[in-house]
Image (cartoon, rainbow, N blue to C red):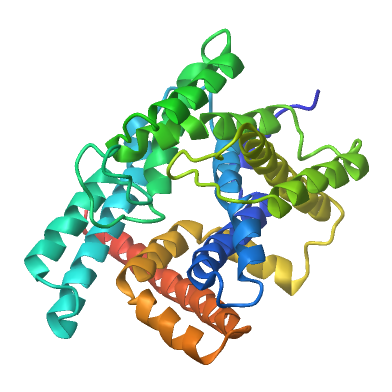
Length: 361
């Protein structure tokens, strides 16, 4: 059994993890773009299915990879890393939504708009739950930053479970508790989404402890097998939402989605680890993705903001009326480039403000 990565090594960024996160955030943007063009753009269904089978599972697994289960849980650190970015992103969305409506006057009362988005921010749902499941009625959804709240709960619970005698069994129970209870009432703050994400976070932790991504033994057989399962999940995809604890409409769908999510995450990360170990990480593409991987939180915040704020219904209608082909891919490329560029500026701004604050002390 290979030993886990040392604390000294953890302090340095692990390149294959950063590249995996970069590909996952690109898939988030691609999936959110493709879903708007379903039935209009060529290849939109395939991109949508491919993205949703792996993007968020990869983020949960890579987060678990760095989970220090032997340390005391640092609540303040987790709040700074996950809750504060969620709150900042929500404030920006509310501010820009209301400001844009003051100029465009296309979304009714700005006061009601403020109330709707504030309610969505407090609830934290990635989508609008049905009226019979919601604790209180929602008119809009906060979007992709639900992930931050879910990850907060998943990491907290995973650390607690690792201190028990049956962490794997308890993680499975957490998954089904979140899954089944979400069909009775969908609670605010993404508690149930976090419960369902616990096994994925713990999977990443076990991968680190047992050296799954740092050993080459049998990789030439494991990766093709994992990829075959991933392909099965893509081909049979008919809906899968970690945000809403929706893992399928039938037993077959459930098994395909869960196993596919696990296989896709392990397949991608293991493949990238082999590339790094093989000394093929000096290419410009690899280095670009590595740098993007360190920006994923900022990209997510910017992407969710523009996904909520921009009038995508009008954009899709305009593009769909003119082109039934690959025009939507141009929209995807522009979104990715714009999200990344603004994310870079946001990080620099935050770093500048933090340096000024430290200098003032």
